[in-house]
Length: 197
Image 1 (cartoon, rainbow, N blue to C red):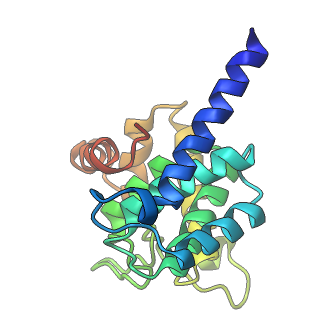
Image 2 (cartoon, rainbow, N blue to C red):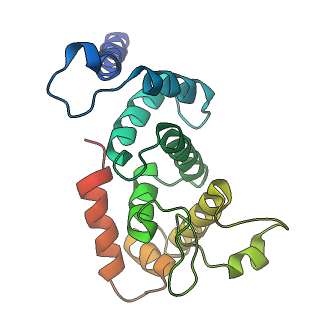
């Protein structure tokens, strides 16, 4: 029975991926069908990633999140590179990638060159003093990998400090401990845009 369930699950993944990748030939109701370039880039992204449990998970997650992020990051290659790096760093820090997407959405609206009034930088709006604390010479908070590594590590640290209380951890991440305004914004964006359906 478990083997049958796994086969059905794999079949569902194949059907979903097939319907998404070959949408230009079968689907007339979607606003923008996937083109050959996107299909090729997705294939390469799926093969080259090592943060996913299996290939099918990679296919489904990357296709789904790529469509959600397209309006913010129109360039397909940049979008897929960003998503792969977000998934990798979130998984490495034992965070849900969708949570990290919601934090980035609220913090920088996916502008990797964003700078806040307080001087926080990049996708996850990391404060520059962290470079002095934990960075290496030449680190740059506008670098995708550096920013995500530091941001995810900081969020994980606060989550551990708050004994798994995500509401408090998010408030600490934003520097607004005791206030739920920021946390509520992240939860709202998570539910509206990034939570897997």
